[in-house]
Length: 576
Ligand code: ADP
Ligand code: MG
Image (tube, rainbow, N blue to C red; front, side, top):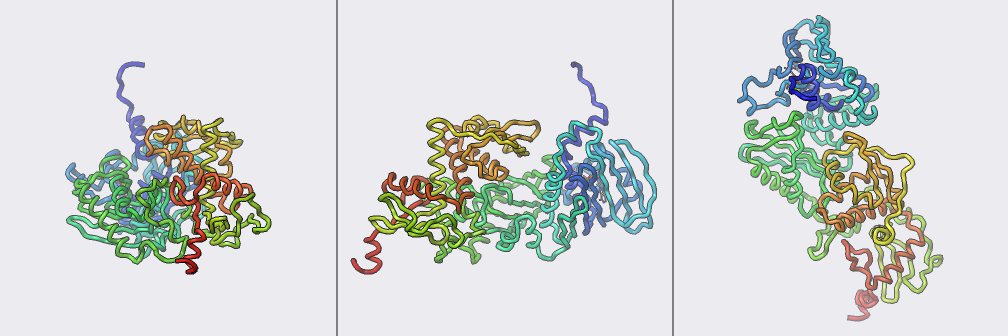
């Protein structure tokens, strides 16, 4: 084909629509933004079939009269700005005048609205961008937007919609993210008649975090607020013990708009600093309120990216606020005797290279298993180790206690098991190659752009490790095979972690292997926590013997620790 052609208006609209609305969740975001801009304090969202069949957003905002209703579906029609200068003083969530026409271009839409103070309202219907009818109708004050048959005229786009459950999940996430920024608004979300979110207005922000972070993390949150020249920074910080291997629980709001921003993420990490294990991310929310003129929100059609005019000042302010909030609080590195609560936030020693994986058990410690729950251990009499350490038992559900010729040997069973997996995977890679297991039921993944990029760069190396991913189109990937040793792992959870783990290690193949194997070992070990078999204990102990001196494992925190008889005798003042 050749020759340049101007696209028909309808096609242009559909293309533009693709940038603003790509799935039910983005439609919900735009519609709820409109409701918030209209001053609503009650916003109810409903979907059918995850929004593929129907999306409805009902609000009690100021509504629209007949003329505005007709205008609202025109492209670049907005009541929120008038001149280009207004772009620099945007206080509303919307301003581009694109959402309604974009949604209208790809669905069958009705907008029913009654201007506050008027006696009756109007309903407008529009299908694939073509205006249908507009009629008078009795309706409550406010606006109801109903979007049906999303992408019905665009089979190619419709194909990319995921299962109803997946799409509903995205919608729920979108609505959840708005909750903390608008605690005085009553939000509800129902899918297929089932209530998913019910958030009555609340004077306290913290309850609004529960659906985002879970109750425990929300309860542990610390609050700080600082004023700076021209802006305010408010933070809600979950202590480092709740940190995650991915930055998926960071919530940033600039003038109440949920945004994603690298600079703010970096500042947050900087503020937490040693309270966080290397390579992990905190759970936290940041609210920055500043003069609209000091930030550009018109960077991307979805308005989730922003640009600060003085990014430096904001960066420093956030670091300072986080430091103060964490520092002044009662939370600090515990010096108490609780062996479990303590170790995950012990500061790293500079002379040891600590790979992040060794520090991940703490995430599971909420479901802490007490000694009586450790299964599979035999009594010392039943267990024999050639002439090696003799197992006496385990304490704290974590530490094996053994007697050796030199004294008392303690083994961190989690770290030890991880170590075994690590060594074994490493050996397999070096020798014959990893043993691979094809998945009978291949798993399907939706990857983020970031994850796709990492895969583009490193898929072949992951494949050598037995992780075979096939690109299925769009952001969809199919996981076809996995290393046999990691059959037990929950790959839904693990794959994103694995991909993230190979991201910032550069392009050296050895380093990438190392990072991936460490991540795999870590994940495998966690799952096997209380199921280490006798043979694994023997393997572990014989390895310990082979390695010579316990206690200084090359990676991360110690796996073994020996308290010598001499130390014990000192303890009991038998020697000085
Ligand atoms: P924008 O939000 O960028 O202005 P939209 O296409 O989302 O563009 O909406 C166009 C206009 O329609 C808005 O400026 C607003 O005046 C009006 N509008 C949309 N939704 C609502 C609503 N729920 N209540 C009142 N007015 C609305
Ligand atoms: Mg809008």
